[in-house]
Length: 141
Image (cartoon, rainbow, N blue to C red; front, side, top):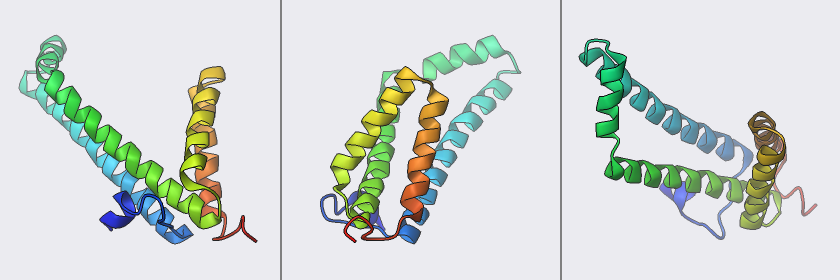
């Protein structure tokens, strides 16, 4: 499983069902991580008696540079895993994996800058749907 998530960077391939499964797994990891952060913030506010200002001050003390560095590293790992499984799926379709991922990331960034974040999210969802539906070796046929 780890080999599919972080290994076989240049040669790996994922079929449609594997891509769906690993995408769902990555989403669940990210959702769980976000829920832990939200629960920690809520518990901190509850422990401080519901005083929002005091809770915000406490959060500023907790979210120091080491915490932010760890959070940044975790987000880069999650991004790499997402890019890697996308590259493997694109490679399975018959296209160049990492170059296509780079083009998609740049395209989403340009769309987000020129139009809106919602349009970029829609484009991302459309690309994900296409990757989930297009059969293996489609571009080579």
